[in-house]
Image (cartoon, rainbow, N blue to C red; front, side):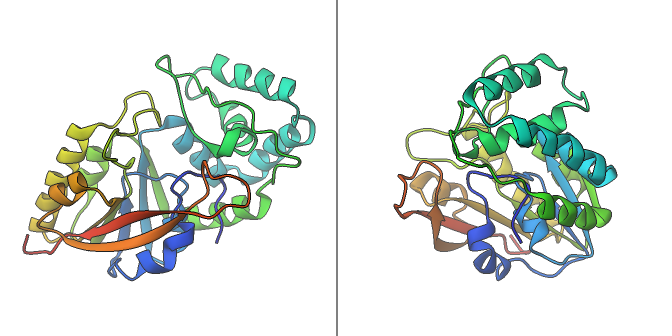
Length: 267
């Protein structure tokens, strides 16, 4: 099942591998929602979906509540907005609206599908600043929107820090964390204005251990680096090769080494 958004690090291409590491449970808790690829490709009875990016969560909530209205508004943008001038006009309109404005949601989808490589990046003022992508005909994900609206009937959405989602986890839940990846030279801090640095990665690892101590299984994805292996040294580490398309030259095949870390319940 493809997703509504294009997304750097989407788990669509490794979902079959990832699912082998996700235990059964009554609810899947995701503190880093991203494209919701895991929600869309698993069959838990319920989902608790959180993310610090308000635009992302606001869009998901609107799709869940008013899929037809969302499709109508977003599709109109796709029909007239595939020029560089129109892209920057609509990006300015998006940045001019206040957080939480209902009109930002269809614009967020438009920007995602028309910007360079589908990146989601903001400057320090919280303004979306990815340049125009120059695609011949960006895909409008009507089927994916409708499928998401159907799956969202068993989902709860929260805009908040990952720690808030982890606090909501309880017995019977499974927690899957897909944080901004940590690399050897830098960490990804532009996904939303608050950033996500080395200290946050350390806090996430400690929180995972505490949850495991309460009997809640935790599965975490990250890049395969010495720092990541140190943070999760007492976890079960599973190395995988993940395909990459963001930043790849046309026609080329890129891949990256990643790990899936699982926490034993007696950790």
